[in-house]
Image 1 (cartoon, rainbow, N blue to C red):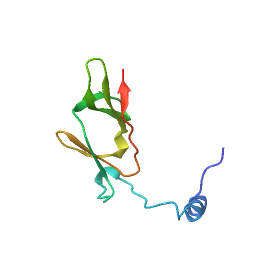
Image 2: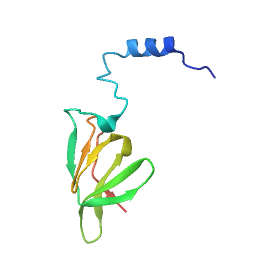
Image 3: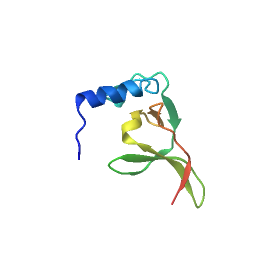
Image 4: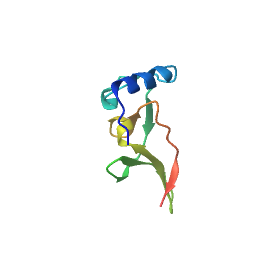
Length: 94
């Protein structure tokens, strides 16, 4: 197994420079102007890598979205700010 060298990394970045918006080493401290703000009722299940945010409930179903913890910029009482690169999809959580 080969190890990526600094030269390999620089070549990779040069090849993909047009598709890279920016390189953010700490997304939680990002002041990204394209950040998304999503409303939620409460947080559901949490794992080491993601959090489930409940958006609405019915008598038999719970709806919401999973969000990677790396994409969460901040959480307020009923709103979460998410990095622009994260796409969320409302799902039925069972």
